[in-house]
Image 1 (cartoon, helix red, strand yellow):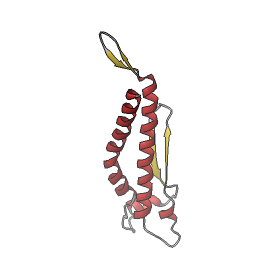
Image 2 (tube, one colour):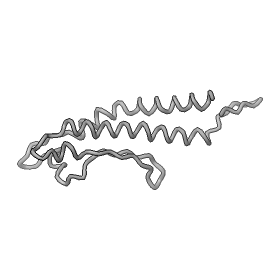
Image 3 (spheres, rainbow, N blue to C red):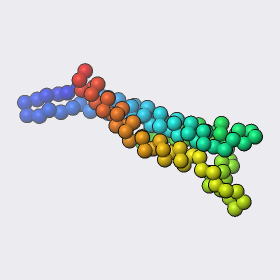
Image 4 (tube, helix red, strand yellow):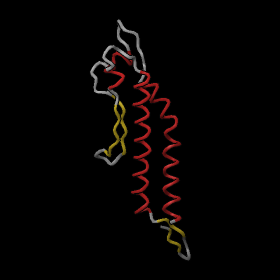
Length: 123
């Protein structure tokens, strides 16, 4: 809601802030889901497909109030494949997926925020 006075024009951010946080979280959730999907597609396909099927994503608010998005796997040996070992060549799949998606993340989040601001200030 916009409050217009004789001397100033201001935006009441008390309602807007919550909407922006929700939209940033929604946009970040989309980004980390795409990272997990990209990692699944890039991961080596072994006999069990454990690694390629094990990637998930989550978005949450941490104790400090920051919006956090994570993509990864709980497979204990995934880092050996990603980074390699003395005997095994690295086969990066999570990092390239993250790099590709994070390039687009700023635009996705900006679009969500701009859409929220336009919707909340015009309505």
